[in-house]
Image 1 (tube, chains in turn yellow, orange):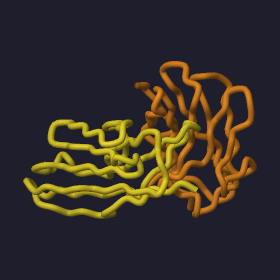
Image 2 (tube, one colour):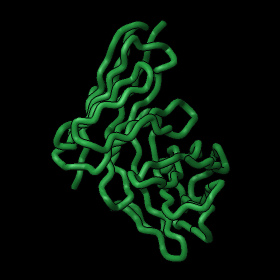
Image 3 (cartoon, chains in turn purple, orange):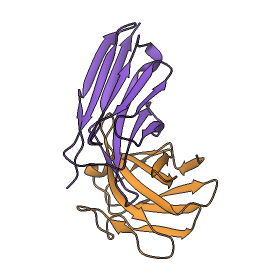
Image 4 (cartoon, one colour):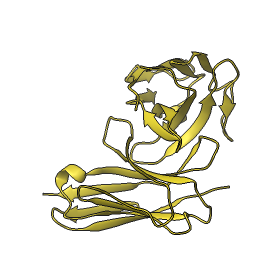
Length: 110
Length: 114
């Protein structure tokens, strides 16, 4: 059974601080996706990383896929209150189904 | 991407009753999924809704409790049958797109069973 361990589960920080969220697995994924979800809405896709070692940037968010395609990280620089939400990593195999991590609830205080 | 709508957005139901949740997509898609989510927690896949055949259920979920219909490539329903308070949750549908199996989610249905 494929599992994705996501940490930390909760993060409460002040505006302007940096943070990193990790997703780790013993399984290889063909791609790793990151989603953000706000209360009352469905998750929204932020980025997909496909190649081992790949780094993608989305404004202040930096996503990295591990060389072996088993792990990924999300780094936020100078967090803003608008970054508050539930962050989910999800691994894709070749069945079309996604394996989700446990989620990280981020609160950024002004 | 895709635009996905769900009805109802929320409901409060009595135990023992059933609720059918609708999911409408603005374009034809092959892969549709139904998830359950407790507030602030991750998603649990209930089943894959297959057009023209029976849904494929994940371990712990059965057709009698969560019957799913998929009459065409833009629409699906999930019924939560014989509800109990333990069924109180957020139910989300999603569609799969792209070569990397990205998913696009509806806004969810918040169900409370009393």
